[in-house]
Image (cartoon, rainbow, N blue to C red; front, side, top):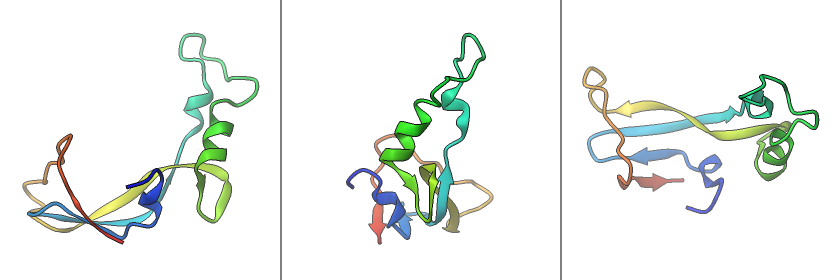
Length: 92
């Protein structure tokens, strides 16, 4: 998928489970805090750059960071596992 296409995807199918992508996740401002000094960046970077690259749909003042999803099918008790490199079928 091209960058930020997750905002147009409705469902991901992993074979023994399926996820429904419901709504964008807002990126928090922790990206603006210097992790060594504990101080915010005076220009609110890199948050402002991230917001310019991937704004929240319908809330352009916020930066998006992926999508929140719910388990549609699959064993909820066994909690399906996603693995790095696992292929998922996209339904948009």
